[in-house]
Length: 162
Image 1 (spheres, one colour):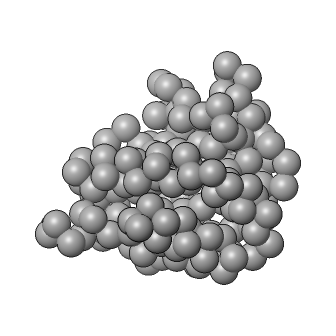
Image 2: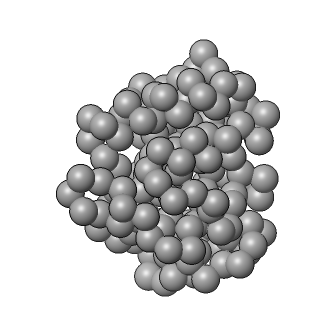
C-alpha cells in the first residue's frame, strides 16, 4: 500500500453503493450484518458473514457507540484475508437503535473495513475529525438518499482540508 492509498478521503472509500438511507435494521446484530452486506457491495470484500462475526466480536469486547449517536464499527484486527482494499459503509437509521449495554443509542453507523493497521488508524482519525465538524451529523441525518449523504461527506472533507 502506498501513502496515496493510506491517505484517501473518506468519500473515496465510502461510495454511494456502500451507503444506505434509511438503514433497514432494528437491532445491534441486524445493523452489523446489514453494514457488512453494504461493504460487500463494493466488490472489495468477499465474505460479509466473516466480517460481521469479526465486528460482532469487537463490539462485545468494547462497543464503538459514541455519545453523539454514531458508531464506528470495525473488527479488532484488519481482515485482509477477505478484503482487496479498505472500504467504508455508512448507514443512517430513521430512529436511534440501542447499541451498547451502557445505554448508547445510535442512528449513524460507519463500518470501517481496513486492509491494514496504518490505513485503519488514519481512517478512524479522519472520521473522528469529520463527526466533530459542526452541523455534519445533522446534515447526514437529514440526507434522504445515499447520494446526498455522499455529497455531505465530500463537502465536510473539503472543509477539513481548507
